Image (cartoon, rainbow, N blue to C red; front, top):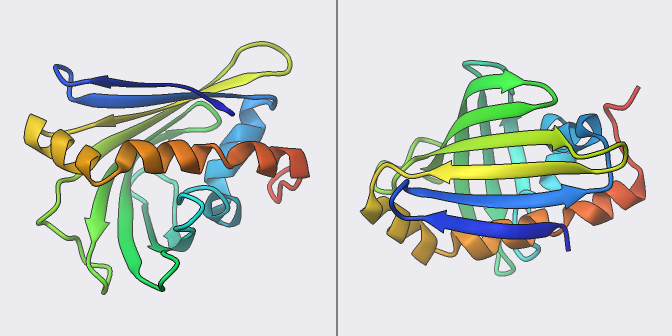
Length: 169
């Protein structure tokens, strides 16, 4: 499995997933930059994602929904703050209502993606979620965030093995 650690730090209000891949940083970045590739892994296997908006530029917006086995949908969005391809992505992550408007009854968190070369063949990716409060962290973790993101990232190896990269030139 690609996920090598998930660290929760209640004092810092963070959860950080760390994964390693046999791929270049540019190839791992493609998994975020191409919405069709992102759809292949962003949701857990039983809740695949569909991106209806995908603008990874500062001030940009991404919107998606994940569809469960019974047809139920959970909506989310990112407001992109900072982008430094292929090394960093920083966004505000939120839940959305069925019509795509922000669901303010659930907390938002910061998402920070860091992609770094380990050696000529391997790349490390970390996804840090920073929560606004202890209560928000507990609420989102109780909803299954750790399991969901671990399962989602666990699908990346199959995408990399397939060799398909729309953005590779």
